[in-house]
Image 1 (cartoon, rainbow, N blue to C red):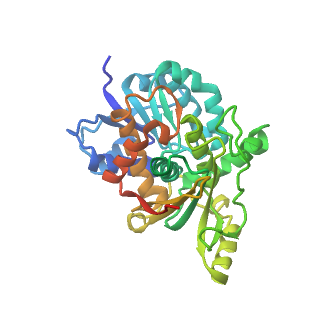
Image 2: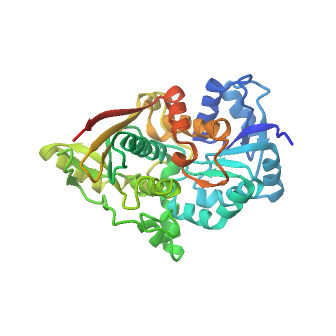
Image 3: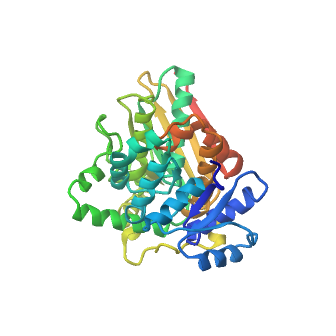
Length: 394
């Protein structure tokens, strides 16, 4: 049976959902070959957002309440893939993931909630494998630039030196932009879950929480400012490391440990040299504003000007057992939490539909599910660059 839609944007009336729809209108308008619809719980609100964004009057609207089984089943019957921006996912994603896994419908989200992701893996991976559903978490700033940056670095290390980098450092060199209200809400929901549910805290502490049955070597904590021994600059804890590192280890796990069973990875933010770098590193480490009550709220976000003036620049430094080293830079041309994220999740969805026919059902990260094809799409369409910067041939 041919379904009417390739893709439904679930949460199209929210702040990030609107940005996804705007991107779809520009990049994949009617006639592009991608059949997509705006989805949400309220028909009048969907129509209002459609009109506010200047979308054609015949843009399809799908009214879905994921809390109502019949409504959720109707969604499954209408689309090949659900792109959801409705978080925190541990509060609003359970039924949707279960339905997609059961029905063989692909799924992408912006999840940065590792304990919930592990719960979904345990609960639904077998069903997804059986149905053919490809469930791909973390398709925004957490964790695409990091997951694919390490993937590209390791691919280049293997090609040039015949072995992967046993040690990789992810270093955020520059970043301008705010984190999303959804990220802040996810952090608060995760902390609440850790206080209420046995085992959640342990999952949050474990760098291998997304690799069931595998525990690798001890990993750097990245929890304190320090001078990076490779760069010679001060680095500070990076707020997204808790999710990105776990996704990178899951990618390695799903790739059959292509990075090595002894792979060590951490992420930190570069703050600079000398006393100024040290002071800034200490200030970053002390900043708890993301989880504060006056932090960003879901549905809120920066202006278009702020989004378009944002950017990020991440360096990956790999070293193998023989002492070879390689550096890869990943850059984005919009603020990470909204402008770039809305482009990344859309391209991940289209890539999964159009460029990954051989990826079987299961719960995936972006690198093993889409790898080089997604890197190519992001470079061509979404304002990202992936560049080998330098190498040490010794």
